[in-house]
Image 1 (cartoon, rainbow, N blue to C red):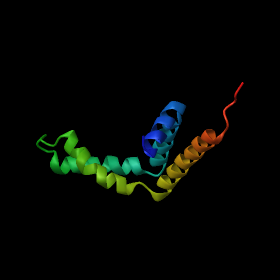
Image 2: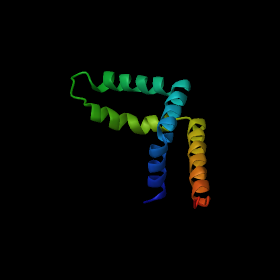
Image 3: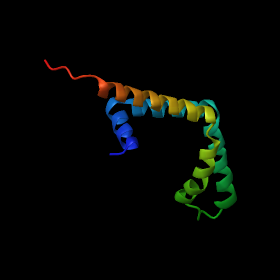
Image 4: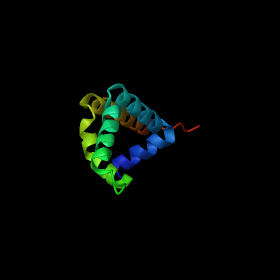
Length: 101
């Protein structure tokens, strides 16, 4: 298992994953990112979706790269720090000697 897989598994087991997702959602809402992406979707649908031939998959494919570039660096850094904290906790737990009672 690679590092990202181990982190993913650990965060799911400890419940940290939902905390990270909640943090991300709240930060993206606070900075206006969600509103920007919603507006971008509306504009694309107005521009290309007038004949109902534009699918959700096509919308996602077009919006995703643009939306990723709009995520503020501060949000990315905060999430990275949170993940590093989790990795440090994993490392510390692995270094602790097991109790041989």
